[in-house]
Length: 553
Image 1 (cartoon, rainbow, N blue to C red):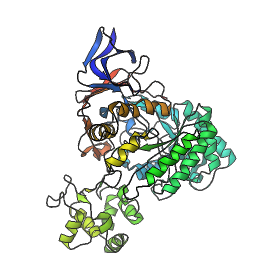
Image 2: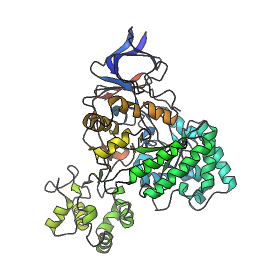
Image 3: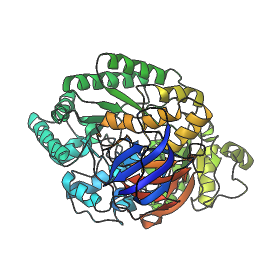
């Protein structure tokens, strides 16, 4: 007898093979049979007219803290994701000594835009080492987790405050190697590092103080473990520096026999040669035998913000960042201080923010005055006889700072350009940032957008190619041997969806974080059921009580 029998669907098995009609049988959390299979089952799922595919895999997320109170990483799971990779960008929540927690929380707040309440109100810190973190998360998982360990926290554990001051000694590098071995032994699938990020005080994160000898030594450990992944954030704002990092990653890949991946790779019509140049260099390095996988997201870059919270929209304006990172009372005092405001406006140049802020659109909801909703800040500023930056501050103050602004289509917006890049055989679909930047944009629905925009609308990929990209191809790149294919013996991670309607819902604000914190989310569209290791985790628009997620590597 089978545990689950999924009947009558179009099976897209993740390998790229042509879809075929048939059934999928599941027993003991594994795929038991695929195709012309019948038999008794404890539960039958009618998939007539629907696609049955392997669960989707997201290789770039920041659900590290959310998993401590939400084992489904909502709403990621309902979008068909059954395996996620947290711990990117040099940051993870372990290994982490108790004395260093506030320092790393500050980094998460700065880099990933997570509210402080997420770290203080929903769980108790009960671990320091990676094994302890894994144990804390594994208690209530509904989704599979393949975690990276962050270079910055490894450095901080070994070096303390010196991690953000200097290069490591040979003894310290050896200690980092031993610590990385312990993390890999406890279930980490690789190491993440960053060459760009800063902490809440504007200082480079610890990984940026590492010399090449340190990174090389850590990659040697990844090689010892059969070739585990190195993920990095390169200097994505400068294509020449990105290309230099591609070359460096290639050398590490060849020297130690490891896969490497960098994210993000953005495309912009303002710099149309950047992404193609990076891809061309990747092709050259793959031809040498290196494995350097660029990660590209599917969605355009849209950023929403209000002055209630810090936002990456102001990342290149240090004075604005400092003001908006203050507690609310101090922030309001700064925003009502004429001298401070004058300097903030001056920081935007002689146009008073017209170029940077004029195209902002006032969003609905929150406390936005209805007369302004849907209009550009430039238009509103002219009406008020103000410079755009001054209008933004004043409108916000007049409404308790609770006015949301949208900076839409800031890049990565051309379907005609992005489609062929996503279809490129060496392009790794990822960089979703799921779980991060939650008050700036919804990091959910990238998979649905892949099918709605690039399969149905643009035809840049076939259905089978798109499924392969986010299932078996991702599993192979990351060495997740049991995932990504509907084949007998593989883990029964399955998604049933309607390829005629799959997409993503409208971005909307919800207040479901610890402390009633706000984030933007998107609901799933066209997903019927999601199974994780053979158990139904989401179906009929509702989450189930399944706790079948595991740590996988």
